[in-house]
Image 1 (cartoon, rainbow, N blue to C red):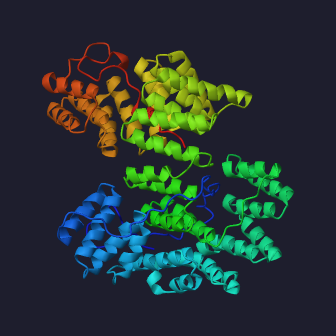
Image 2 (tube, rainbow, N blue to C red):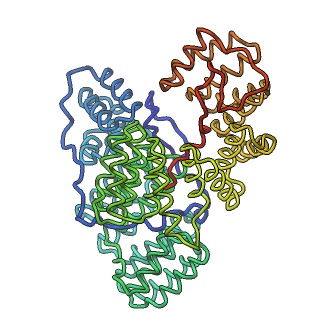
Image 3 (cartoon, rainbow, N blue to C red):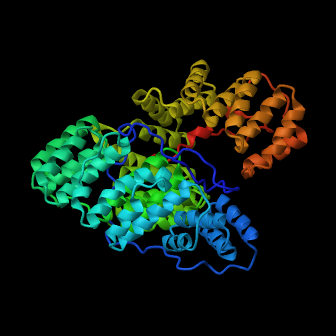
Length: 609
């Protein structure tokens, strides 16, 4: 498959692989997502006609559309490209651009109208998506035969042939052709089609009343031991009143994947004889296919096509909250925070995905520095799901980011207390230790960081934090440097950890080593003001004053915080003070150096979701 890149809309579509033929069983991470919004389907976003924009020529609109796409504003980009294609209706290239961006923005009705207005000048990445959208619209409008026709084996499908093969049986069922719908895969079928198509075939066999064949088909796909297939078979057993067998199936799967939340919830439901998940409808089935493919594509660093499939899935099943959450994450990845937040807000209170959506919504505000809103959203999410550990961890991290260390410690203490003798994982002790260190409780911090390392000896972030803290305090210097070197070996592409090692060398007056590590750290994190500032200091101590001043000047272009800006401006005027003997611990930095002790850059752990 090929990719139509949203963020690189420079000229004509660039060709690159979309769906690589990797091992399906090594990539299935989709368990535990499917659910329906508690308050019914969310409203579908529709753009029946192009937006009214200021008159301009098509080229100007095209350039403006590119700019909006590069800034992550897909809605505005879609409107501009759409208007460009209307302004110059004879240009099939503009029509292809408009169609692709309209799909990504979720404006499927308008995208279909653009595709129907004339030929598109594009490769099969776009022409195939036109056919898939045509089929999805036909299914949504109960026109099964038209969907079958659009999905017929056609070279124009190109990279979308896998999606077409998975949707085709559902289209046949919608057209009343159950023989075609339930036919097994033929020899030489794509592995993705065999895997996901096997689930679809089993579900269609169940819908057609051929229960013994459905049982055999479900059992065959569950033999792969992948959680997504185990959950499908278990749900079938529950629907058939065979809860005891379902519990045994889930229990065996949990022995292999004890931390899988979807399997745990499924076993709990089956044990309590709760309501079994309903079999998918003729619209929900193909939506499942598209969501599964989208998750694989997004996990394979191909978010644009993945997002397109999510938009199509939501056309069929607007209440699929797992699709809204994944769409929100993908839009955030593409830089469209407005669209991302709109997607997260589609998940209503009471839905199993609600807290996950709210956490991601909060992090979108943290991303732009709005700590107050991020904290409020997360606090409200905790009120809706008290005791949810993942939400508490994110809340503690947001508190730490706001320098409210004591409150963060209190939240983490609650997690540890509730866990009791069974304990918690290493990251909780790490996070609590980081907050304790920042709040001046060093003995408690050291104990928690050591315990975290005992539970996870090869955690680079913890090695980094504890090693840096020891160097900062002038304690255990040899062991601390060894820990930082281990952290770098475990995470060689982390500019933050390399910065910690380089700054530790600087503070122990190994200036040549500091320059070496800090230059590499700047290469990995070129926009980090603090790392660039450290490199300037290391240059100065190595007698490279001209380079140091250049580096400090560069820091001022990186939007540093007030502390770094003041320090750099002072150093640009006066340089660094002469060294004193003996070397001072890092907490007593030279007056013209960085102000006071700091946590290493990687000691700002990202919330683990």
